[in-house]
Image (cartoon, rainbow, N blue to C red; front, side, top):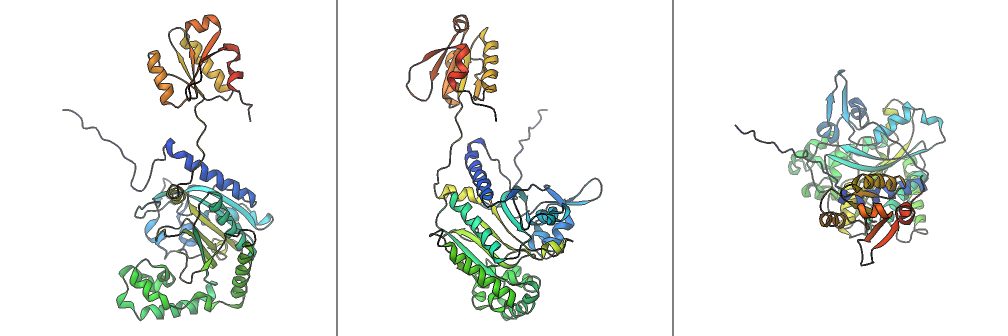
Length: 430
């Protein structure tokens, strides 16, 4: 009986980033690295999986991430591990474990890393997604808040993305939020019969999240809800006022820079305090945020370190790529294949050696498959090669090879075999 062949497919909520897509990804990563370097941020890479307890303690037991979205598993040693759902907790763990408090503060770090969350896949929101993130740990001043926000602004602007909005808010410190959250519960409790099930569950455990609910009824109820900025303590108020003054100053450097205070803006993780912010394209809809972050002064202490302030952001690369395509922003194309070598018969071995020689001189080279001359020329054309190099028995005897341009109608030329690398423009090693 014939065996049915199974065709494997990628898991739901993941994607294949094909060679034809890589120009966008290379452009985004290169821009992220360049802007981070301009601000003095060094790269950090943390493990793809961490102790489950790191995220339970850091992100918060009551958050949607911990309750519904983490990929957790028990390894062969019986330890509970979790694929990293976000980057900040891991960077803070590394800060504590590696004694980075001994360095000049703040410690400025960035990462380009995959994250994993079990959630309903949407455009730009996948179960395995990639983030550019930046963290500044060890300085609680409003000046560092402004720096991180400026970094995010510069990153988006350098990508060429236009027509985006910066929204920000202050949610104060945990202790001053206690009476504020009580007033927030009182407000929404008066309309509890109108709240959808998901928001009713948040009323007790996370009332702040009701402010950014996607449900229209909840949003309507929240229009006249108490505002966090009206319940700030003296230090938080001074921090907020200074931040707004610093952001106003950025307009003198970047005339297009602007912001709006959004009293409904909160963050979904427990560790945030004071400044929270988001960048989103105009008319992007509820899933349009392309960069978001805020201050997380309590987090280092929650994870077992000394009290240490911090602020950072994360930006989903998938959403950035969608926005680049949507705004039809051109990205640099990769360098084309320089040469395809066409050969036959006894010249095949010499052609293989020549291909290796050219590649050793950093000239991108492919040896065409062993087919007819016409088929090999067709292959060179389909591969997008700049030139086809023809090496047959006649060329071996004469010591010259034929170079045929493939991108225009320039005539074919003959070059001495010994001079071909120099003619094609060998590149020095790094």
